[in-house]
Length: 122
Length: 311
Image (tube, rainbow over all chains, first blue to last red; front, side, top):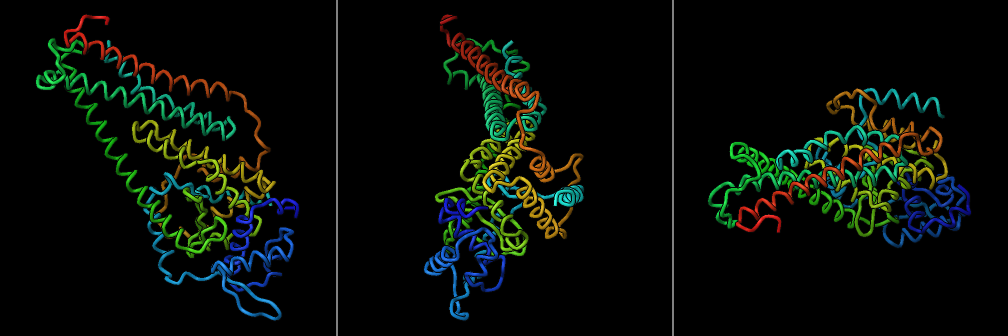
């Protein structure tokens, strides 16, 4: 993805991408690490701006690391909210009716088919 | 014969699944989504109208109700022998459909409400709501504002570019208002059991439309296909201890979506217009026969009320 294309992406989409990278990493990341992780040609200053904005909103917490900060997502203080939310939506196949899930459950044969497609199209 | 006319809308939905599958396979996903959803709704409307009219003709044979309807002559619509059992059956089916529909609507509404309130309570990062869970899962959560819900396990199973494809897919669902199509298809499926395969086709069309939108947003069909395949495999691995789903004769929706993305961008395939024409003809015929039957019964009722015929 080109830097030019990133300029046109909304601030919300960039925040989501940064947040996703931090959750995926599982450890605190510096702006430089986030930039590398995203591999999207975003400027370091842009990444730093997004990180400090998310920190101000209370979405991220940060700790000193070297001359700057390392950021990580604020863990759910109640812990249970996420679990409850998931179980609310997880009652059998009901959820599939209005919630468009990314991937449906696989049939027994599907796994093999998918692995073959991935192998043939690296 | 009025009753025969009213049976046509009840039989037509059985003819819908075959052309619906064809529409899904051969039309661009956006067009397929519209065609399938509108046809399903029309077929459902025809079914409900026909059942309602059948129930009415039978009920008006009951003396008390006939008096209430100010009928002075017996209704001539159908023979007395058939009318009551048929009407009872129609009324029963209508009641059953209404019951299951209301139950689904209530459950869905409760689930959505709680999901939205939980999502609203968490600090936002754009439109993304992250759920800390060991099970890979992701879905679009419609509402104001629209959100994408993704579990931490899903985020960890994909790389940064694949995550962008996933987000683009979910944003396409929200931007396209796909939940309206899914809800409409669900209503139709509750009205007539033969419309369930059509509902499944609507779901598939919505996924395909979001896949294509994601592929053009990230500019890479292969990357989008890989994201879907890897997400499905990760979710499958996490689901392993669950009871196995019933084996299907054909491959499931996920491999079909991946294969569609790996093949070159679809141009309009042969036979697409035929499939669309066949499906919409079924749907319009269903509404037309139901309306004709209902009008005929209405005239019968007016005659039975003592009005002069043909007014």
